[in-house]
Amino acid sequence: MSRTLVIAAGQLGPVARKEKRSSVVSRMTSLMETAADRNADLVVFPELALTTFFPRWYMEDQAEIDAFFETEMPSEETLPLFDAARRLGLAFSFGFAEKTVDDNGETRRFNTSLLVAPDGAILLKYRKIHLPGHRENETWRPFQHLEKRYFETGDLGFPVAEALGGRVGMCICNDRRWPETFRMLGLQKAELVLLGYNTPVHYPPAPEHDHLQDFHNHLSMQAGAYQNGTWVVGVAKAGCEEGCDLIGGTCIIAPTGEIVARCSTLGDELITAVCNLDRCREIQDNIFDFAQHRQPRHYGLLVT
Amino acid sequence: MSRTLVIAAGQLGPVARKEKRSSVVSRMTSLMETAADRNADLVVFPELALTTFFPRWYMEDQAEIDAFFETEMPSEETLPLFDAARRLGLAFSFGFAEKTVDDNGETRRFNTSLLVAPDGAILLKYRKIHLPGHRENETWRPFQHLEKRYFETGDLGFPVAEALGGRVGMCICNDRRWPETFRMLGLQKAELVLLGYNTPVHYPPAPEHDHLQDFHNHLSMQAGAYQNGTWVVGVAKAGCEEGCDLIGGTCIIAPTGEIVARCSTLGDELITAVCNLDRCREIQDNIFDFAQHRQPRHYGLLVT
Image (spheres, rainbow over the protein chains, first blue to last red):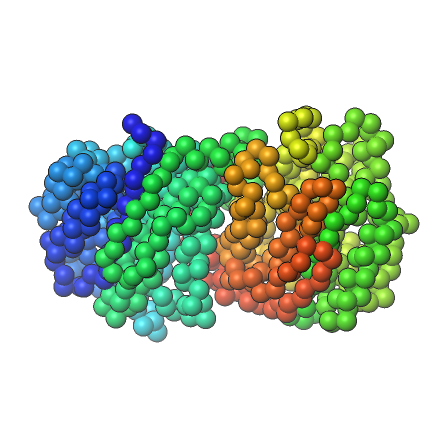
């Protein structure tokens, strides 16, 4: 398989609370059509792409919460994504709320992303580890961020798969702020990291930083790319969603840390870049040659 | 002690191979005078401040190498720095090549930095852990980078001291590119990280990145500041030194990752910023509240 991919980032504008999955899926397949027109090999969609960002509401009725979760993938409503991928010869990744039953019969809920091959095969699955926000209803906030309540911490580690001609990892939203995330993927020689996010402009605990949200988003992803010599595709759900402004800034970042493509709207928008995975070597074999230069025996605190 | 410090970064222009320590010390004390005029509490100087960046030359004669090392601190030649600090009421930090004899009578050589109180007390000592470059003479290079030959890996870990009214850590040059460095300091609740660097514009193993040196310098330091909620003072030895161009870009970075002061020359230059250490809380108590949000049980690879 070629080591040079055309990668598309499919930013989504806001998804209303009442918007049906079929409508969102239709918006996503429309972006997939555009990606295919540009000869893309892969389209990356945001975190929790199929619904509104529901952790902004405190809900007590588990049935109401569960309505935002998927219990099968593909489902009848999401099958058109898989069909489009097959028809267009495109891989795609996207995030969704996953409700599953484990081997012990326990119901588990995760903030999950999948990488799917054109033929529908699941190439990689990731469950979000760095859940932000809080567990209880904090009524002083203009909106909630209840990921710690509605999801449990991912239990799959930070997997990296041989896929699409290279080594691919994923992370989700708040994971990208943590250098540990990118390093865990980098130590497994990831060459491409796919991630989606829903990031409010307003951060209630420290609103004095609201004007820095775009800067912090790019700073974290660019540093993660450079310090691990990996391509990064970061994709937003953007715009004013149910009265909550979400940042955009969807971008594709080279292993040098340079942003090589970037959205310029807060709506549904597709960008592409030609990504040569061999360029990772420029960084991984030199300044960040881990075997030569890391000093893990001095890093003990990192795992305590 | 006040939690709001006026911090000065004392960038140095090139130091010639033949330039005497007394001359460099005079340039440094001149910057200290300027800092005192601006009511600074602390001046931060670069890595290996007292001499030219000698690892660019392959030398076989240990006496020739040792001529770049300090065997006592202060020495007769460096005492004027300590005298100036006392007279001006200024703390200062600087880097130097340290040759010492350990408890077993073995000679040891480190790339070291010190933080010195106005009264001459050593507040903090650090020995560089991430030594870049190579061990053997690589004649294909236009200049060498023999830190791995001339120094051994630092043996003091990443210490953080209660000093100057806050918690202070240090690192040196290539350390700043490694998120592990800042995280080791951040986990000890550092509020101020002092660092100096000698960074050639030309990187022989990957010259296609030469134009990105300033970007990578700031990207690494800004990410380290933001992701740990600490002030960072990064200070260059800059300019064309013995035919080798060194980047400048000396800057003071807020815990938000914002550059709040920056040099605009490649010569001796002093910049200052008012640094309120309490601002670290905005980050350390919120988005990067480690106790709330880190997931160290998922970070096993980081120490292997």
